[in-house]
Image (cartoon, rainbow over all chains, first blue to last red):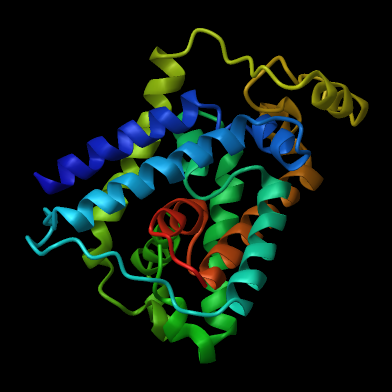
Length: 144
Length: 129
């Protein structure tokens, strides 16, 4: 039942990402050129709406359907070096491939098969990170 | 979304060579159902909910891309040059996609999250570094 619900949420997310053109390589290129408000408007409204939902979740102590416990959003670790380094590398890849981890799977479903290269690359990148920097790896295991 | 990359690595058996992948990936399987949903969502949206896949770009972006040889800018959803069927014969472009994907996977996991985790969830949660 839960699996079905999450699957349906995924379908909705996939449709929205495709229809809002967030998954389009062109929109991402345009965004990085600061030529359009489109992408900034979408993420801006997502953050505003998200903040409202988060506020509601805390205020009304909403329980998770996963375990019946009150939903608690774990804060990310403090610091900035890791986020800066990771963010710059991520952005470089985003600019090159034109897809981030959500849209790449949407594009796969939409039938753009060469996106498989990007998916395989990102799996290799994840693997290499945890292979090459094992010292830091425990903290790398958390976060969505 | 990017934690799915880690989960997939574990599911494919990466735990055999790297101990940090040796966690119970089934615990995160709810997230994999969301992922499977996005694939189906992409299929449904492109097949049944879309009459035109033209992306209405800024004319300046179109002109710039056409100058760079991306001739279908403003006429399609994805550039034929990178995502068309021809790409299988163009090693350079294939490597570009693979390398870009590598940086996305490496960077997202290094930072502990991607666009959905950091930009949307964390900003919504009003968290300050």
